[in-house]
Length: 87
Image (cartoon, rainbow, N blue to C red):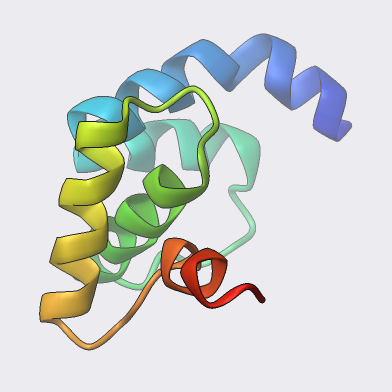
């Protein structure tokens, strides 16, 4: 499946999972999109989802900022941090 096909078929569900932080829903989507890749636990998925939310253009700013704080509290950082530094 190409990236474009994945976006068309799963994009709305991926966005919903990200906005709602639905880890179980994201695991189900991931099993359809990339069943050959290993999922490294719910904590890893949650951190990845928060990171993705900071990059989503269509994500409301309040949600982006919440995810940025969540990542920073855990010492992970975000792409928003890089944008502030001009990188």
